[in-house]
Length: 142
Image 1 (cartoon, rainbow, N blue to C red):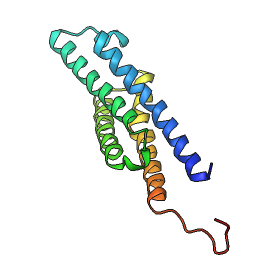
Image 2: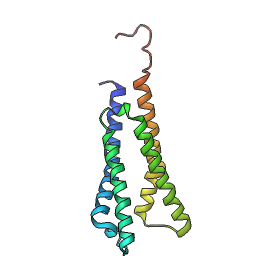
Image 3: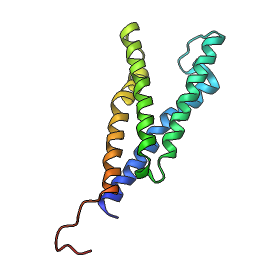
Image 4: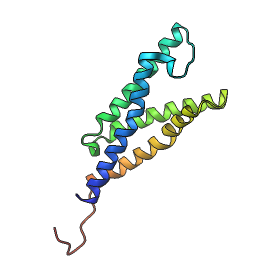
């Protein structure tokens, strides 16, 4: 297996593993609303929490849908990254307006504003190398 194919597979594993978090948290939020945080919500708050959890679940499932033929999913990964970063900016605004949340929320913020954009840039690099592979050195065996 060549280096590019190995890097592609590692990227697939990283995206698969990373998408597990929004899938699990989203599914839990859809089923149990704010049970994870222990917050008490009214009917409207509960409905909104479950709706946003459904979006989170969908984001994770869409990231998983990028894993096969990942090198050709640049548009989808870029759009999902934009959505995740927008959500992270909203979370950051909340942090600035209301104070420090629980450690788990800070971890989510790091995933949203640091890890996801880095993985997206990594994906861009792998996709570009698949599209425009580097030329073999002169005299190299095929």
